[in-house]
View 1 (cartoon, one colour):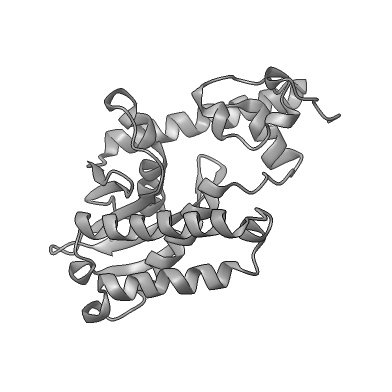
View 2 (cartoon, rainbow, N blue to C red):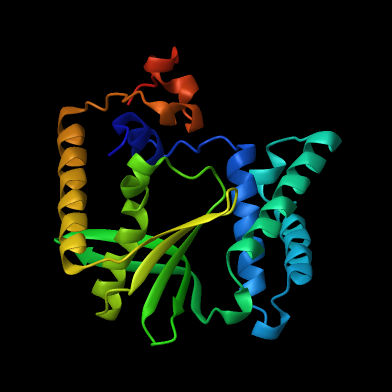
Length: 243
């Protein structure tokens, strides 16, 4: 659990995290890529992807993620330019015509050592040998080399869910960082997934302990600048709501 207090705000108090430009941009670009891969392979061109991005923006006109930002004309234009730039960079990484997706925004759920674990995979595909590949898109900055392993925790959890639901360990998991653009690839193993289980169990135990004691302490780090709960966090001068 990176920050126990943020966990409390999100999952126990159910306080919605305020909309942010970075998160909304990521959601819209994710939606555009989902629309692209819903097309026949021959139609997965960069031109069509930019059209899909326009469609994604149109869909978000009625969604709070975009509406609540209250962007002025200049801010909205800047957001659109940045999103289109990410689409251009995506096509520097791979040719979507060659991808064989078997699921997009795939929701998986399994019981892992008595705890319900859920995840949403951006793209689940088959390689040329028919093996599973888990792909996760990232629109933020890629990690430094010494923090790559922590960034793979999420996709390795998806690999565990694939094992539990499909009875198969993916041949690889990958994070596609559109802004760079680069791809970080890892090959999950039985040992990897045992480690994921151990980490998951430790998080569950930490949550149970915090709930029992009623103690959810802030854990200040570089990630604080991305947190939507800073106004409620004592570590940032905020006021902690009554539990």
